[in-house]
Image 1: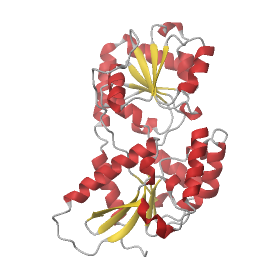
Image 2: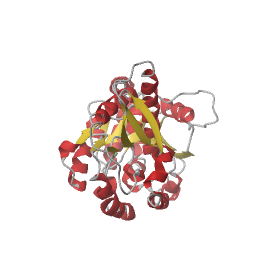
Image 3: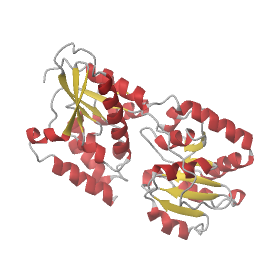
Image 4: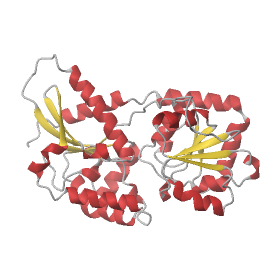
Length: 352
């Protein structure tokens, strides 16, 4: 949790600069009669919100370049867009729109002590100033409305897109012999990877290895205590093309989170034809319903059963992978950015 606490301090320090001096923190993206002032601080965020911010910015710029030869209908009006609430200034300009990915810290305050307090004291106040709130799933919208005291009709859902990870066969990544499952993510408590470690103790899947990708090496001691260190392989942070290579070779991706605002990894795996086993919790049940296997986040025996099912039935595994790929292909960053522009255009007549 130390990294997240440091991010909170960075966010707070960012609030001390006068707004006029912060204009350099915005990227102007003119589209028709709206000038989107895209707050760029979240682009530098190393977490998922940074990845989403970069994808949206890329698509908005493409839309803007496509408008270059069109005659202007009127003078463009500024609309301020924040792709992550954590990077918003203390006092919002108007009109403004915030993308809130999730309110996980408020759902699990015992896990996210300092971050939950920051949400309750500072970020809640910022959210209530916005002219529009966007989020990435209907389950997130319900939680935002309830926990931040925002009318549900002031919140719109725009699903994330999915980027196809490149796959490079020739690389330096060493994979275990035999079949393996892959986990892509951190070792934060709400990610719940412990349930998969416990499933690995089941004798019915003792031929299966687990490959870990991401900043999760703090889990090494737990793996050693459970005496499964010979079957759990920590690769650390990989380049996209290396991640794509590993995921494409996996039996399945495991996604045991107790909550996600959206959950990109199962869809990224699906684009490569790799099926997923997900926790039967939001938003995975919303996004992956019918195209993934689900298991209770607190029942390792169910995880072992689902892993065994995919190992023993290649025909079913391939069919599930194809269904997941079809679902993943319905989520595009182009569609996400077009929906975003439509929402921002509705704010252009708000008083600045």
